[in-house]
Image (cartoon, rainbow, N blue to C red):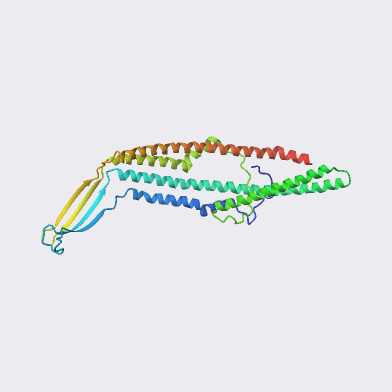
Length: 354
């Protein structure tokens, strides 16, 4: 994108100008996808205590050993009113690993929400400046079309008095038609980009987008090494990928313990109206009898998931650096073109016209 000294680019913004800072703030406040990302992070955080909690206990009440001939009789020593409490206790470490996994996933969701916020800001800035560029370009193209129309009138007058040729008239008319076509195309593109900006700001697509600010580009770009260092240290998505890899490791460690049995602890109290009351204590274990079909495949599954998470983290790292270098190259190209136009092409064009 080449920015020239178009009318209004350096002047103070009008009162109805949508400033970039205001557009960014509107997007942060109203963009539905960003809100969804934040709510997803909140939901993930609420799963952390759930993952580390014991299963709900079972409480049962029973009328035990009643005679069918007389349900109200309590003369039999085996007859009692029983209260029973049962609690399943997972093998030590299972809940801890599950809680650690959920915590890492919650942190990953929070970091991805932060990354979504940064990506939204970048997208708003990109669309904002694209519209601002179109507005300036439409002004320049309109001025150019006006000059071409003046040239058409001059060439027609010269042709009428016999000092010009018809080819000059036709070429000028074709130039006006082509410029009109370009203006029409860009005006429609501006409508589409305005709808896109409204969507980013959480507004209806048809809300009018007025004048926008078009700032001059920075004269110096940061080096690739400095940009890489900042990205590696601060980009939330990279840290989120590492958190997901850590979560997958905890899931694998939890799966390794699935072969160990869970315990069941039970307490029962029996009330016998005609005799002494009774109490019972029960301990049971869940036997992994079908480990070959359940626990062992689960272990392999979690091992594969951990390797996949590591690979995805590496891919995120590579894509981040590649995209960073790509964008920096595009910015350098645009900056060099801007300097070229300002220093050589525009002055030469003016000199040729003069």
